Structures are given as structure tokens and as C-alpha cells.
Amino acid sequence: MQLMLSIVLSAILGYLLLLTGPMAGGLLAFGIISGTLFRGVYLLNDLHKRLLKDEPKPDKAKQAREDYLKQRGF
View 1 (cartoon, rainbow, N blue to C red):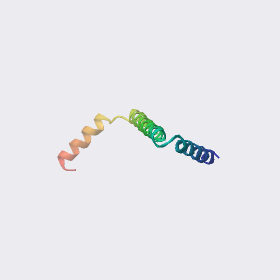
View 2: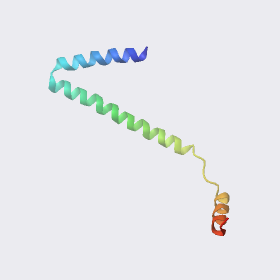
View 3: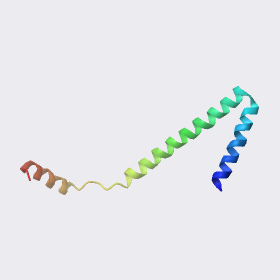
């Protein structure tokens, strides 16, 4: 239902942008598209920060043991 509403509203917005003329409609369309893209980049950056925060930190003892075994050839 939300998809259908979004399609209808986008069609109405596109029609209104066509009625306003090429300059005003182009500027409004550019503002809408660039604002959406910047918001998407912001949300991806926020998601990346949250995922890195929850990542477990490496165990130093386990890492030292693995390095030792690599040096010994096991």
C-alpha cells in the first residue's frame, strides 16, 4: 500500500514540476534528488559507525599464540 501511495505521489509531484517550467522544476527536482542522496549517505555512515562499535575486539593472547605458531611453522 505504501508503494502504491509513493508512486501516486511521485507522479503528482512530477506533474507539478512540469507545470512550473523547466528552470523552477529543474531546480526543485535537483534539490529533491540531491537531498535524498545526501540523506542516504548520512544513513549509511551512521550504520557503518554502529556496526563498527559492536564489533568484538581481538583477543591479544590468542593473537600472540597465533603469531608464535606462524613463526614456528605449525
